[in-house]
Length: 265
Image 1 (tube, one colour):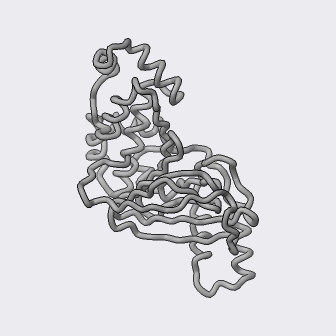
Image 2 (cartoon, helix red, strand yellow):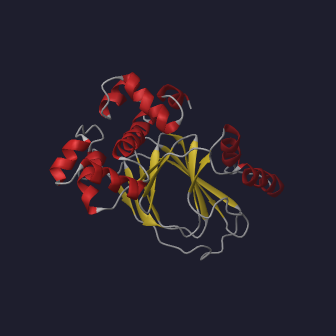
């Protein structure tokens, strides 16, 4: 989550322009870039004239579109349609990839941001497009297969951030420290409302109750820690669980896989 562990001067803040979809007529079908991020990096809100696919060779990052925060991993990327404003956060050590797709040559797989499964085959093909000396025919064939393979993923790692003033203290506390153990009843008492009111507000804003939203926020933070190589037991404690087994149960409920399997991916 953006802002955790931040020290003065420790974050590389980058500013990019805002473009409407197709505002610049690019000469390519797919153009990829990659970077090993040396410092925690924040991309201020921007937009591209092209469609974009974000994914990581190593590590995890997040992209924020409106009130939604998407987690990006080596196996789960994010498709962002051209012209969509978004910001990003990438931890130091992440090997970050971005592929731009010309809107006149590459049909959009979705009109809204959507998770994309980055299979080993798709990853190899995207990397091949960055190979120097690739002939025009080879590039065209590879691009065609890339476009054919890309589709919305059956699962997504997504957290919606509520903007209701009532919930702001809860959101700020959890995003600053996912291990915050304040209970629903304690929050309700602190805010001067009933537990039911807090639950209703979370459900109206995010589609999740307080406990479900908290679990999702914790798992999203845990994914970044796991992708950075931290041990499962340590991650469990850092996101508020007293045992690896309890953490594993919640992690599977949110992601559909165990923490160990996630690390293996």
